[in-house]
Image (cartoon, rainbow, N blue to C red; front, top):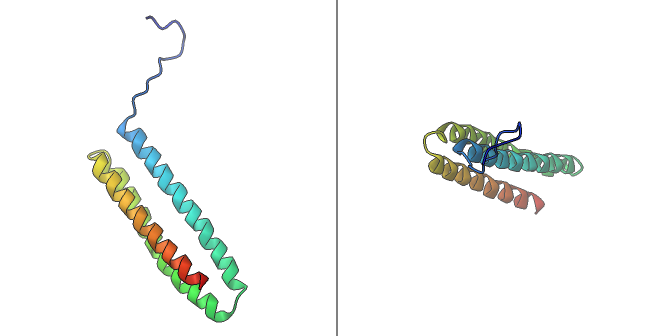
Length: 112
């Protein structure tokens, strides 16, 4: 059938770049949510005693280093996705899982 409109035909083909962009956006959104949670914990810790504030700062510094490492792995996965999407996706998923576990552990220890 001939296309009689000025618009190009739409396709449902998902490219590697599209999948990469989607996964990367999900990972960035996840980091943003954790960043918001970290800020909330910082504010709450300031209202408590000095001992709690220092403990929170130490945990959050470690979590910040882990977050930065995750961000680097995200960029690396994005670059590698061109050559091997599945491996890059697995690496990113693994890195995000590790970060989430570390973050949960850090927040749980702060709630004690």
